[in-house]
Length: 124
Image (cartoon, rainbow, N blue to C red; front, side, top):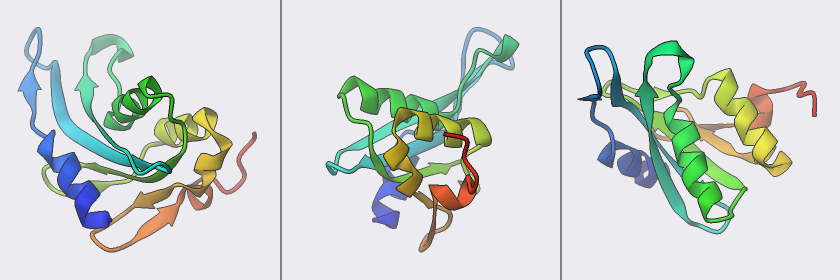
């Protein structure tokens, strides 16, 4: 599963410039698999004024359009490595579904961490 999701994430990876120099998209990409086995992808937006968002947010939005909420696996990548989700992304996953505390966050080619280990004393 790890390699399949990493490969899917890499298929949408690739930076491209937006409206002006310094505004870009695609430097980070994400793939997730739901508990139904569906795979969704997303890319980040790097913009001014804090209106950009992470690749995980884009993939989760795609998942929500299909009315799915539970993530089994998730991975984010850039050109160099696999990335851990930031705190905002971790929080988003839990607020979408408390079941996502069981989400397996891929941390390298062969292993994962459970989201609840990354948010050990969650407030919800």
